[in-house]
Amino acid sequence: MVLIPNSDAPQFTAEAVIDGEFKTVSLSDYKGKYVVLFFYPLDFTFVCPTEIIAFSDSAK
Image (cartoon, rainbow, N blue to C red):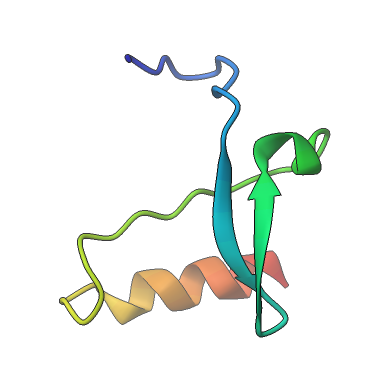
């Protein structure tokens, strides 16, 4: 599947931690809102903490 900038993302569901609890969410839950999907290689691998903090600060 090829994603094209400014096109609609495909629908999906995923497990997420929200307020400390695991929940199943779908992209349609956020219809009409801005969504940032953040991918990283694996847990406990190097990911620049500055980038993660910047995402968090921007969301506030």
